[in-house]
Length: 242
Image 1 (cartoon, rainbow, N blue to C red):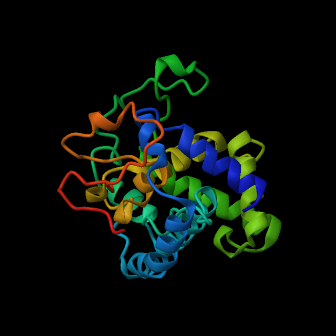
Image 2 (cartoon, helix red, strand yellow; image 1 turned 60 degrees about the vertical axis):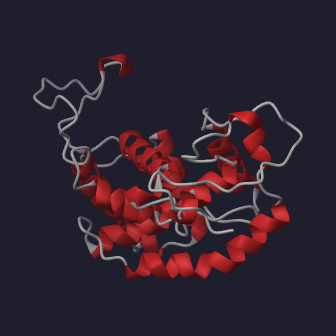
Image 3 (tube, rainbow, N blue to C red; image 1 turned 120 degrees about the horizontal axis):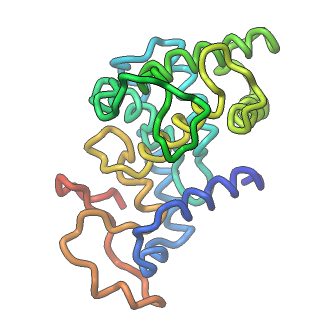
């Protein structure tokens, strides 16, 4: 695993604040690696069989490539593709969230306002993806004569870094805004309950040792040196694959 990939994996683990400390020791590295090898191909095939409800094929190719770079698989756990994160994001586009129904969207809009004043663009999340992906692909075409999904891994990572720091100027949306939505939704899809389309087989929860919707695990919270013996359970009562 590269240093860059390791830093992303560490960031994901540290970004979840509700996990009891005992849960971090849920699985040994060897067990996780074996599980990843057994389930990776099945989960990738599941994503390939999914038909996007909102994204066009070109947008879908971008989303898969970007999610794969943001949360790659490695020797410790599955990545965003195995967790079907793109499916989660696609399904969110046709909800109140994707349509901007959860926000005040009447203006006036002040994009340069401080974050404390809330979201300041007239674009809904689904529109942010539409224009953000198209503008990023246009940039890639101009500089590499290829779409983002057609670039090699190092080039894709470099583009994502430039989106993150705002050094790429997109035509219709601030690059940082587009990247922040993409990263936030990718993490949400990796850690949300599986009923929303992502976190397939609860791979995100298994990576950080989160017990999920178990009725009671408080007896284990202070047992820091003991292995938590149970896998996570989803809201619907489904248990993770060992």
